Length: 228
Image (cartoon, rainbow, N blue to C red; front, side, top):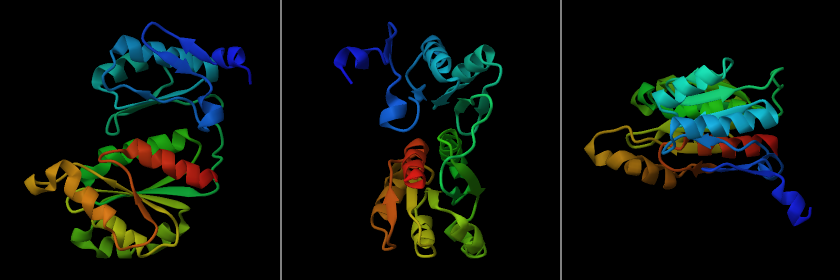
């Protein structure tokens, strides 16, 4: 592709450069990170993405962002807990991933990060299942769910505190496990650093780790694995 042809795939607004090449380079449309953006900027970017493809995904959307997007796009799906807004194309596309991405949470407090991951994985054309509140404080809860774990093609495990659950899951399954440390925990958890270090030092094979509270990053990685 020539440079002048490449330039036609970028749409320049006063505050953003919309990258319409992203589906070809990344496998999915550009995603709007609402954090740090005004409502006008978020809506403006969403309008251009929707015009190009009929859909958009907005993450880390504050209440004002969510309200503005829903007012502008009647069909947009809001996940208050995950702080996402997703406008799905019509008709709704069939999943293209080869299997199920299972999103597992250690505790209910981890749900905001897990929901961000689940919505992102679905927007990236994956089938998604959830398994919530099965942390090591009552380890029998996860041990009774081995069938669900083994049905999955990729597993995202979201945990705070000491971050032990991904090691447990990694020891039970033969598929990739993506660990997401959350900032849930008391003082010595250091805002998720303790969970992050615990996951990085996992003795279970096949466990990889993303940044603290990064449900989006976990879903993006899981989707690539599921589409490989």
